[in-house]
Length: 284
Image 1 (tube, one colour):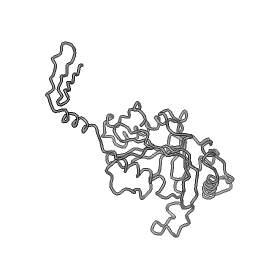
Image 2 (cartoon, rainbow, N blue to C red):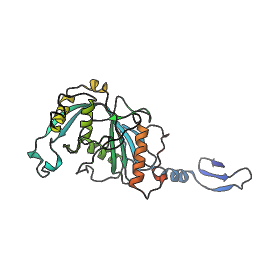
Image 3 (tube, rainbow, N blue to C red):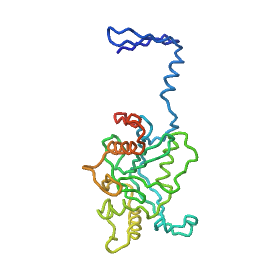
Image 4 (tube, rainbow, N blue to C red):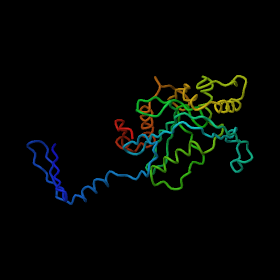
């Protein structure tokens, strides 16, 4: 197929020809600014001013990968299960706050068509992302399943109106770090404590309650510097929320593929094309 475009500075015309023997189909001459404007309008979508940490956006804008450099992070939680928490009067419950050295964190988030998060997975890495082949590791904190998936908080809206992808990313980030934690979901910590990665604690499940183990876990983590945490070996995430295993340490690309398959299940009426992920897209 041959496509010929003629541009004289003010107007555009041309023709489309299929094969040597095919009859050419002529393009109507139009003003250049009209043609270019229409082409751009068909390809530009409102994503807002993206944070510099965004590493990749899928062609359908449904999956975004962004990261955060290492930093000291205040982690706050109530050492009780949610059923025992008076949501009308949080102040009466004891709150524990620890400042932890968090390594590089990688966020792989799926959004619906209104830019609201529908799936958030957070992993840790020893350095920044440079390839879809980069391995990812489990972040052993409260509120995460063993596959790195965040358990969505009961009150999940930090953004009043979603009009851009930037607001969706902000919502996802706040759901991870600013939604408040309790002991409802402690799988990532209990698993990591049992295999003693990235560190071991003095309390063990055989002679201590899980509440004591969780408290000791955060307390010990708070003593480590960022440099020390970056050199630690973190656990490998599992393939399921509660168990299962990958044949090897999963990569960024593998996790994106898993999320895409989950989206197809969540939205069975959507076509495969609508959720296609082009992993050849360069990192941004």
